[in-house]
Amino acid sequence: MKLSPHALELAQTLVRMNTVSDQSNLELIHFIRDHLARLGVKSRLTFNADKTKANLFATLGEGKSAGVILSGHTDTVPWDGQDWSMDPLSALVKDDRLYGRGSADMKAFIGIAVSHAEQFLNSNAPFAIHLAFSYEEEIGCFGVKELIADLRDANIKPLACIVGEPTSMVPAIAHKGVYRYKCCVRGKEAHSSLTPHSVNAIEMAARVVGRVRDMAEDFEKNEPRFEGFDVPFSTTSVGQFHGGIADNVVPRDAEFRYEFRDLPTANAAQMQSEVVAYAKSLEPRMKQVAPAAGFSFETICEIPSFLGSKDDPVTRLAQTLSGEKSTTLVAFGTEAGLFKNAGISTVVCGPGSIQQAHQPDEYVSLEQLGRCEAFMQGLARTTAIG
Image (tube, rainbow, N blue to C red; front, side, top):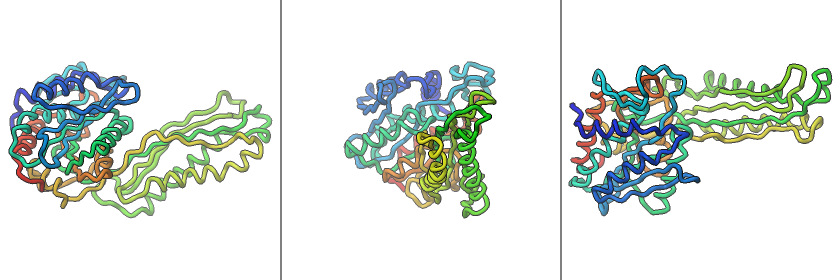
């Protein structure tokens, strides 16, 4: 399946734009908006608070019945400190691969979808094709939440959604959730020779860290397995810990960050409630020494798990278009759970492998992009979903 020059050119153009999550994505969004406008298509933009980033939603086939969303995120992870053999924004084509940050995750999918806008407009399909491109997926799926809220407020009710994350074009019907939190501990400082007059924030934090570790071991030992995942049970881990100013000062402050990756059959809210309840149980003794002592928690991100079905019409559609008879599960988080929770039947299917995403010399093969283009061409010819 040979990739067309037009589709490759659009994918390269998007890869060359710096849309690391801490940068603006407006260059890319405006480029797609203007490209669609030349075809007579209007785009809905929803912005972040300071108007430096935007989501784009566009309907190809206005007036048709509720359609299929092609969904992708426009932001990428950074490349600082990585050993690249080329400019990460070069979009170099070499050895039948497209290289560059975001090539696999997931600008090539977006570029190929946009390159087929005219075909979607001229399609005889009885349903519309919606393009939904978001910001800040890589740091917490923040943009798509605004996009979905806008669709709800506008009473736009898509029938199905295909999230084009890299699955090697094998439809994925489930992934774990990603829930991250920060715990801040306030104690009371003192000279280390006077520990009874202090509340050691590090030691109190360590007790809660220990409880998080106990939960991880309990998941591994006792949680019912969800076969198909590399790790078929929920996990939790502590990723950062900070506290203290000197060896001979009992620390007043400490903080740590931790995450849950919950199975689609698990309850992440209950997991977090258990951590908070344990921390609160430690506070009475802390407050006896220092009334202001205690714990506070901050949510960093909450990305819900996703559970579709091999029997969903959108899954069968993705299998037909990709030529894949099987389905898969993926270990990484996506926006699929948010679309599913909004009542939109969803599947994850896109070109490339997650093993190349976020890596130095990130790439996607032209063979995978050719398969993705065939997928889009088939979608334009589709007469029914499922």
